[in-house]
Amino acid sequence: MHTTSGDISDDEAALRDLEQRARDADGPADHYGVLNVARSASGDDVRDAYRRLSRLFHPDRHQSAERRQWAQQQFHAIQRAYEVLGDAAARAAYDVLGDAGVGLARSAVGHKVETARDLQARFEREARRQRVEDIEQLVQSRSEAVATVSCVGGLRSTKPQQLALSHSFAAALGDSATAVVAAHMFARGGRGSGNVTATVRRPLGARTWVSLGAPLLPPHVLTLEAGRQLRSGAYASAHVTQAPRSAPAATLTLSRMLTDTTTAALTVRTGNQYARAEPAAAEPSGVALLLSGKHGAAGDFRVEAAAGLRQSHVTAKYTHAVDAHLALVVGATLTASAYGLHDVACRVGVRAAVSEWTTAGWRVDFGLASGVVATLHVRRLGHRLRLPLVLAAGLDVGVVAAAALAPLAVALAVNTAVVVPRRRRLVRRRLAELRDEQLAQLHLHKRRAEEAARLMAPQAERSQRAARAAAGLVIERALYGDLPFAMAAQNSNAVAAAVDAAAASRAALACADQPRACDVTVPLAALVAADRLVIAAGASKRFLPGFYDPAFGAPKALFVRYSFRGAVHEVVVRDDEALAIPLKAHSLA
Image 1 (tube, one colour):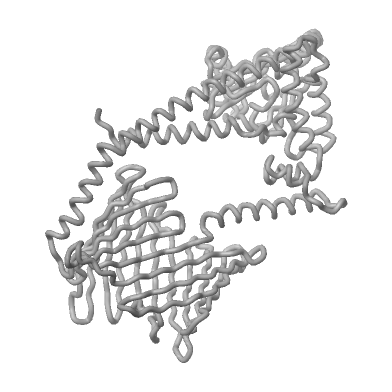
Image 2: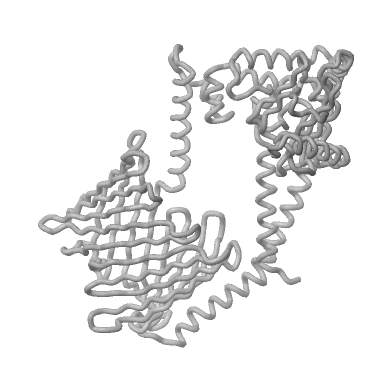
């Protein structure tokens, strides 16, 4: 069977969507939604909501063992929500960190007279600290190893040419400053050099940062860097080095988004006027213009033109994503000097995602003066390994074909014939498993909601019977889920909105038996108090007693048809919108 990259991309997108839905469904309940209170609710409001719902679901109010068991589950969720929202410290931590912060709040030793604002600030600091720790686990350590090997005489006569190693790690200094310690070494021809550099970086306001670095060993070259986000949307940075008895060398860069997919950068270099300890060539003075961005859905490009007194060059690189895990890279560089054309070099390579955090690739660079060099590179998070293999001192078409075209053809063939079909089978198997799990989860949530509605039914029937006799607020029909109509509330014309609401309600009633919407008439009726019903905004309505999510991942809405003082009313609100009834604006009369 023929398999296309578009098919596997669609399957992987569907898998990511299902996994996200599963995480959302398995996530902890929103305590504000469980108690049906706003996030700005006072302590008295939280206490009143708890008392009202706990009376409704207290296990002692139900006779049969099965009903007591279902009531116990609902009562436990209500009690848990009140324990969190009824405690000022736990609530402040929950607002910032979620359920993970509740345990922290109860274990923290704070001053007894801390205000709510003090608590909020304290847990915000803790949230920032945890985020920094999570990020540092991924990026605080960086390293690179480059081992160049000469294979000009064949694989049997390989000879190491040079070795370069570098490593750095970062650590926070207080709330804002960061310290970076970096070490590097370089060895070639039996000689080597190395150094250790310490850098301190600190933000100066919300849009500016500055860093200062100094080496431990000679030559003692100070490095000053700074960056600023300009109000125009551009970004400016400066890199200045200063050595003893030498003029400073500066590199100034100004970058800006030209379009949604293209960025331009202008770089001016004054050049280095002194010799550095490491063998890397000194940067010449000059100016460079860079354009980079995306081309279509699968392409990335980068074009740079640089001019200088000693040397100028034009470089172009294009990356094409074959699929989400494989990309082809091609590029070319034209270099000229004061004596004329210096070199014409090309690049071709392939890059593949080995795992979520690891990529590997094979690249071949060849040119008139640079010879043929094949590079194997592997990258995982902030760590890189490169193994350049010098295959020929000059341009050799046969070597280029063997080193570039053959591996690329093999990589594409293996990806098409083996990797993509295997990945597709795994993705489809996982999709089927997730759909089965989701269906079982849907049945479980539906059963819990139905049992909660049965527990609420006696009180709902009594209150609605009394309201109907007194021409009060009566919930005639309520639907929640992926409703098949646009929301009439978006229409600013009151008459047109009423007409739209009537048509919308008929469509909703006609589709009430579809599994993507559920009937929540009884749960809403049980929440009516003194001819008023208010559902707070900010939380999904699936956390309300008697509700469940009948359509994972789809945007949901709540439709309510009710009567008040003899008039029929209808309203539609989005899942996170507030609902307050009765309102005259909802009347269809």
